[in-house]
Length: 445
Image 1 (cartoon, rainbow, N blue to C red):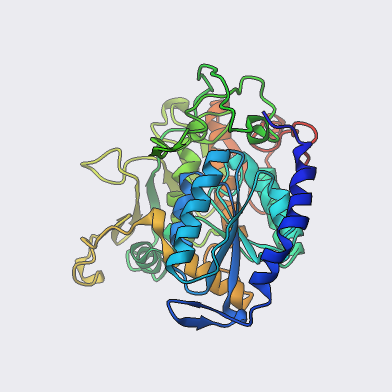
Image 2 (image 1 turned 90 degrees about the horizontal axis):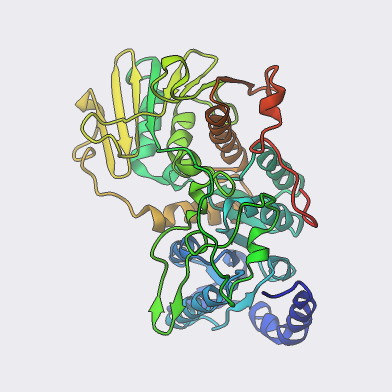
C-alpha cells in the first residue's frame, strides 16, 4: 500500500512535468472538434475524481457535450486510472483534440490545476463531502454523483461551501432532466389530478450490517485512502466494495460497488434509488429544500411500509407503485382527481387525455449515459446560474434518505423540523452516525 509521502513526488511531478502540457492546453486561442472551432469562452475543462464504472458512465455523457475537454483523472486504484486514460485519449484523438490525460492518486493534486474549470465526482458516498468542499475552495464547479453525502451534516456543509465560494453544483439525480419525470412534475404542480394525498415511491431496501469476509488488498489499490474518513473498525477490504478490473485482457467491473448496501459504508437502496424517486416526489409537491416532518419505519406498530409525513398532510410510503411488479422502482402520485405513475421510460395517468400520443410507452432513456443532465450543468457553468438539480436539492433529498434510515435503525418514529434542520426532542437520533460522525484522523469536515 502506498504511503502519503508519495504526494510530494506527485506534486513535483505536476510542477516539473506538466507545465509544458498545461501551456499547450491554455495558450491556444481556440481548438476544434471535428473541424468545428470552439472559442475559449465556450470551453469547459473537466477533471474526474473517481474512475470506476460510474465515473466512466459520466465521462461518456460529458464527452457528448459540445465544448467539453477532459484533461485529468484521479483514483486510488492504478488500474482504473490507466483504463480512464485510455478511454479519454482515444476520445480526444477521435475528435482531433490535443491528446493528453494526466493521472493522479490524490485528488488534492488534481485540484491544484489552474486549467481545470470543473470536476466530476463519482467516488463512494463517504468521500463526496470532502472532495466537493475542497473543489469549491479551489474555485472549481462540481458535478457530484447522488446521493449528495453520507450524512446530514456533510450535506449541509456542502451547501455552505458551494454558496460561500460562488460555485455551480449539479447533483447527479439525472431523472430531473428526463422528459417523463418533467412531465409528471408539471402535471402534479398544475393540479391535473387534484390535490395530492399520497405518494407511493418504490426504491428498495435499507442497508444491512457489513458482513463481507476480509481479503488481501490488491497491490494496485490504496485501500487506506479509499477508507478516507470512515472510522468503523469492521470495514475491511473485499472485492465487492472495490470491484476489481484488469487491463490485459480488459475486464471491467462485474457489479456496482457493494459499499452502497452496508450501513458502515453506504445508505442502501434508500439513498441509492431514493436519491432518484424520493427526489422527484419532492420536486413535484414543492418540497425542494424542505422535507417530511415525521418518519415511521416499516414494522412499527403494524406499519407495513416506511412512511414519511409532510406538514401539509401528504404521506409518502416506500411501497410498490405498480400493482403487477412489486420490485420495479418508480412513483405513483395519488390525488383527489386521479393518479399518475412514472418511472424511467414510463408515464401513465388515470386521465389518458393528459398525455400526448405514445407518451406512456416512450423509449426508456439511457440514464447512466444521460447527456441532457450534463449539458444542463455545462450550460450553468457557462452562464453562472443554478442547474436543474442544485446543491440545496441534493441536500434536502439526502437529508430525507438519512432520516428514513435513522428511523429504520432506531425502529421507531423520528420527528424532524425541516425549517430548523433539527430533530424534535430526540437526542438519540441527533447522536446517530447518519446525522454526524467524527472523521478518522487526520481528516476533518
